[in-house]
Picture 1 (tube, rainbow, N blue to C red):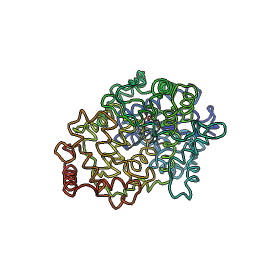
Picture 2: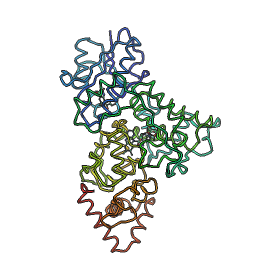
Picture 3: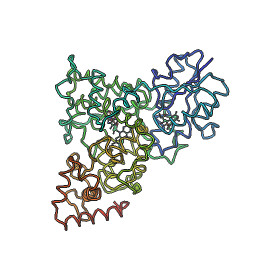
Picture 4: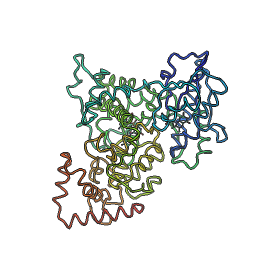
Length: 510
Ligand code: FAD
Ligand code: DLZ
């Protein structure tokens, strides 16, 4: 008897575990665009276009390989608007022996699927997602008994496991595990930033763009100039483009920001990795080859590989280890709502405006914008973790709960007490000035701290330290910050706190 194989919108990989041992002559594949998945967050319009178009292309590829695919295209009048309803409907018609799927990437949906065997009255087999290098169980095993979980040590395990950038006698290439100290240069326009990889939308994508504009007009962002890859072939071309033109500068300018350039030397591969169009090992091996052939320096290649086999796998491990309680963590007891300008970009803070504007246009901002601009501001302003997490989950093409939540709640908001960083990534305007040219085009003055035109990040930074003294003063990595605060005259401290309080009371006027 046939099996019904459910493939989700971020499972677009021919080697998906749900397809192992499947029989194209007997088994049915189900894929569905449904309202419940399209609207549980205010997904950016480009994210909807990307996922629906990539799903449609993948379904077509499967059909061309002889699979029988039942595909539900989105329509508001469809009777089935959740994945469960679609599966129930197909199961009723085709009477499969069981449902097979690969474990999904969100606790919310995972919990639902775990109940389907009861609601559908059918066995539901949930298979391990083998597209990650470290399974949930292997991560839990690694974490067991450790007082602190540190990415760096996990990363070294992953280097050993994969053999990436390892010598024959099992030492790291170049002698060091991590070359991050070389990766903090400001970018002054040279070498020039490479052009992004662009794909002209085909008929399938154009139809989806029309559909999203018609049915999701109120969602964040715009569909205009959609140019992302939507097939594995195109994603591989995007990878080749990155290796050729951007990887050599990736390390040096990894932390840089620019007032004019949206992408700098970043790969823009996360959407393809997260939906299965690219395989993480394939991506890292391509980068490693570029070093062995002399095409890119070690600090770039090691830094890039660390992001994928280190950070990406580490945050996923943390997510599944700590959910569902993790999503409710708020150790700094933040209560503030998200300022409205996160949705409009209408703020005179130039760095915030540029990061949000890029996000609105591209459904993309690079890591340092997410961490040190929009994230840093939310941390300093004391925004509720849930509110800022909802924003990050909605606005980026690559956003799925397993990767967005630990990055936002943990790395940015320090709401989990420090799994993702031993100290909060709080910074004043000085950091933004050091790493970008935003400040020279800003309404606010980065050198000033308490005046009406003083950069808001400055006094908010001190306010953050002062109000969280109990949480951080004993942290050895923050001793210097508190020493600098304590050294300031009481009048100055008072003026800084007063300016910050005014800002906090008037966030929507910034
Ligand atoms: P590059 O800079 O070229 O890096 C290469 C690859 O490394 C990325 O494609 C990505 O797969 C991986 N990577 C790098 N940093 C991280 C990280 N911290 N965690 C996980 N993977 C990483 N990444 C997502 O994929 N989805 C998200 O929803 C997401 N939300 C984030 C929210 C916040 C607040 C922050 C600070 C970071 C978030 N990140 C997220 C991580 C990172 O910012 C993006 O992966 C990166 O910006 C994607 O762009 P890129 O492909 O050009 O990355
Ligand atoms: C994010 C998303 C969207 C917007 N739409 C769909 C959809 O219509 N059908 C689908 O199968 N998946 C979709 N997804 C992805 C899921 O919401 C969910 O984030 C992942 O499957 C979790 O692994």
